[in-house]
Image (cartoon, rainbow, N blue to C red; front, side):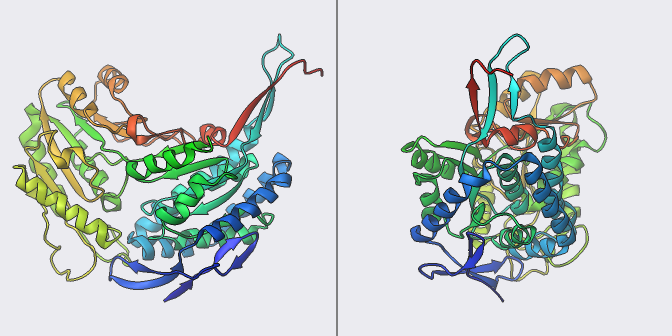
Length: 477
């Protein structure tokens, strides 16, 4: 069992002011794998004080100095990527291949891309050729970064790296459910030689350290990834000090499968939903299928779900692992039961443990058909390996169903008609539209419409979130 009770504040690993131990549970075994401490207001204040002091000098570092440190961090991350994969697999149940090839690789990818964007970014530019006004991009200040458990290092890198790159200082509060990858990343930052106070880490829960960060008068920006419910609370807490708030929240993605979709569109859609055990905010958890291919699609979906293996996270191979916690498991099982009770047809999976499993938070890949868009399973973010299939007749009906949600993070469509793809994409209300299963390029922006949040992460847009814009008149060359 790992002892991870300390926090990283002002360049040192320090004991909490008031010890408050919390067990970290391995979701594959339901056993304690580590012990952390939940921070207090005093711990948060120490971290903020260190970040505020460090900002006075870090903000004036040159772009080259920051690039050099980030390239050093990338070198260390690459060298220790095996440790990161092990930490993610242990804390949140990602199978080893997925943890290595996708979860851990995402952190390296974001580091590489932000270094590239930073090299190209001009922090000081003329307004236009006919003006003597100057536009200056300056670091916003001390940032509070609150990250989730489902894509731990992915979201940490999307916040910490651009904060570093733009000259901000920060306090990171990772999820208390999956804090080990964040603490390992803090070790890497320390090894890279970032100045004391630029990066600080305090573990805690949302009600404690999360609230302290979002309401702290000396924090200038809060960037949060998590539930829409928590995002509302953070916005309210931050309002008192008018700090900038960047939110990446929940989703209930729709995947429109037209009759002219490519042959494996349905099966690929099932694999997409079930990956990461369904714990992705932009997962396409509502599959809308054109009626002319509905019966075939239902058979393919059920067959594909039944082919997906469920197994321990420490094993290699093509399978999904457990969901992250008992609370999450109980919520998902409750929603599966609600689908049955509301009259949807259970075509695959269900609420029982997978065969051979007698412990761990494992859930069968589950498919519901004959779903109506007002059922709970079609409205609520389940955050597990559960898919609802909904029939449609016309393009207009499909668009209406997909948009009939409070969320707007990621939507999907499958068609070989290029004009239809463009036409439908423009009508779907979401921050990203995945066409024919094609992933976005590195450096493109990620974020949501409606109650899926505000702001954007990734690329130049990710850098700009951490910058204030200043206009200076009569700038004489």
